[in-house]
Length: 621
Ligand code: ADP
Image (cartoon, rainbow, N blue to C red; front, top):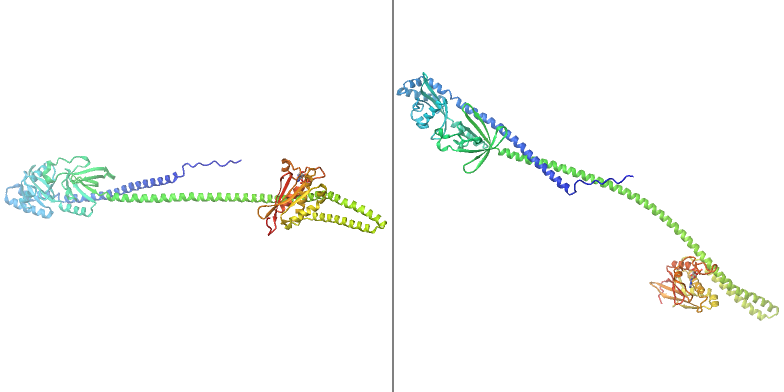
């Protein structure tokens, strides 16, 4: 035996599934967005870094080459005979003048700003611009002292901001020695402004990129952002160096820290920095830098990361949208598969149910057909049995009747015999008139016998089942005639209370049979009664019907027997006298007429009632 398959309990309640699906989808979308953002940001920064590094290299080499090509000038100047002559006799006005001319020559050839020669104390001996220029440009004392300090520190190059214009100027200087004695200083001054102007130009053109050149003191000496110039940079949290030491190098009022804070490290050594402006505004940059070892400087590029972040945001949205699309597609396919599976499951179940139903219908139809056949069979058998019963009842009635008939006919026969004998004697005696009387009597008796047999014939007629309007009164009269001998012999009074001459729809013979049956029973019941009255009356009934009541003054029946009255073969009569079929047959006949035969206690004896349909046009009276 296979039991039903164990019910699979769903792991999750139904309502939770879509919630989880959407939650999962949202998570996938969120994760995709984060991943896409991170990936795109990293790629963007790498790209930015590549570009920045290339730029750094370019700027550094430009700067190096720009400065480097003038580095040799002091050596050249030193070796010039006019300059040598100047240092030999520094007070000679002629030597100064010719040295000045030579220096102007150098200046033109090297496209420097100024070339100059100083005595060891830093006093200007000659310059390409005459006496005033150099002093005017760098301050009368400051520049030479700075230069000599630098030279003492073995540094032959120095950056100096022009005190007046703030322009970036660069000095190459060299001590001139004679027999290990410093006799003077020669140098050249260059302007970094053209280079810076190009960078500024570039910076303006490419808004996103800012260039800073920071010297060894941590001061921005060149910048594509004008307001940052000469600010000190303390990157990595290190404080800007004590600038006042070299304050004469830079415009005094400009030196303030550039408020640059490192926020976090970026890719490949880059750093994300935030620069606060004095007005509280800030800007965020990616900072990359590169040293220029030759000059001791750093070049720093600040690139704008916003485009990277914007692209990362786009990538995040794109990634999210793509993931959402894939997720929704997956959800759709999953739902669709589920729906298809459900549909096919439902279809299978339906087909199965259909097949089962068809099977059951076929089985039930078969059963019904069989039951029907059995029923038809049974009905036929019943009909047969009923017909047989009717016939048996008829036979019983016939038997009873034949007893009555023989009783009825015996009398006239005896009379006939006596009359015949008497007539023969009268004939012999020649008493023709008496003979004639006798013959008349014989003929009367014979006629009476004929009427009895005629009644018998009509009783034996079989019903045709066609209900025609028949006279109730005629049927009652027939019954009276048939049983007249008994009424008379047993001194029974017959009261007929039928209003008018009603016509009823039934078969006359069968109605007569019912009435004869009921009357016979009444006669039997009244046999030992002092008062013998048989009452036949009519009563109105529902609709187009009337009731016929046959009541006697007989002994009646106890209740238990009354209930069994219509059972076949129920009889209280001695064997041979009653069969117990009369009432059964009568009730059957009444039912054929569309009515019902009932018995109940009458005033004295029993009363039987049955209803009949009135013929068309008949009315209750
Ligand atoms: P049967 O007359 O052959 O016995 P019936 O079917 O005609 O068969 O009657 C059945 C029984 O019903 C009778 O034996 C009798 O006891 C009872 N019966 C019928 N009619 C009456 C009546 N009018 N009064 C008392 N008893 C009756």
